[in-house]
Image (cartoon, rainbow, N blue to C red; front, side, top):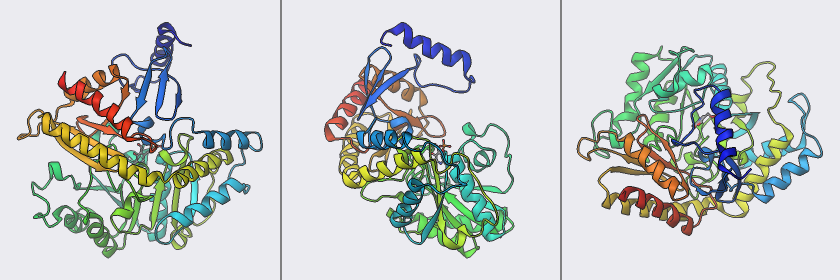
Length: 430
Ligand SMILES: Cc1ncc(COP(=O)(O)O)c(C=O)c1O
């Protein structure tokens, strides 16, 4: 299909037959047709540089040949097993996760999404501790199940009032908009220290755990001070809770030089969750825990599609590409360059209040006025439409929809970044 009519037919059918809540980006939504590496094409043949990767999911580039070959090979061999039978791709991937994740993480459970990965993690923490309450962060995102929405600290994504009791949201380490109106480092990490009072006042004092993202993705790439997690997790452990690290967005080299975001912060979790970029676009969720914690899930647990051999091969092939091509380091080098170029834009354009993130996970927070920091979601909408005209796709986030999120595939080069920044620059000038 390569004409405008067909493209709008796809979008029309999307609007006619999907839940109206399945919103698409852009006034005139894009129907994607195919992709290769850093680029995607719509049904009219328009080419776009993909700087969002389907929400940080196309980690090694669209239709990576190594991943595609692994998928095709496995589809021709064994397409499905269920967790009732062992399958080699699952066993091999689980062994690999035990090897490359930090600390004593050893036992994995595979599912189909980040929602399920987080849900498995919180259930496991509750069973391990024999307690029910979980602390999460304001501005966090955990997914779309009843429990995941209750964990999420973001009203946009909570469609019903708290559906699962026991989730309590702590103040976020959101330095640009400090909830405690303090400034780092003079604040002495007051947001982390507040966890003590939160646990003492808003829970039974006997918590099961703390679930947090090393950098908050949907929240707008909120990046905590480097000492935040050490301080916060120490308090959580004083109260007998475990630390669940949600690496759904920050995993697989995204943050630069380290395979997992939490490795920058020097804390070893008892449980870690993955999804998105782990299999370069094949549906996957994974929860890994220490031997002791995993053993607390007492009897049977099952997932029809969890550990699917084709998805497992896709994940293993993705990890092989990340390791072989040293993409975590590329994310650091090219991410630093992106950051430098964005800081240059910040100097020129007053609507940019903050630039933050790590590696190839960089956010730009737009404001109406740098002093009042009033959010400027209208500017983001305009930037979206203009960058699209220049053939560049970007993402957005933040509680107010005023943060542009940039999370290109980890194979991005400085030339791709120049292409992106030129589009942003032209959009900002306009
Ligand atoms: C940090 C984080 N956790 C969990 C999820 C849920 O993942 P999924 O959409 O695969 O259910 C997301 C999705 O954006 C996420 O960003």
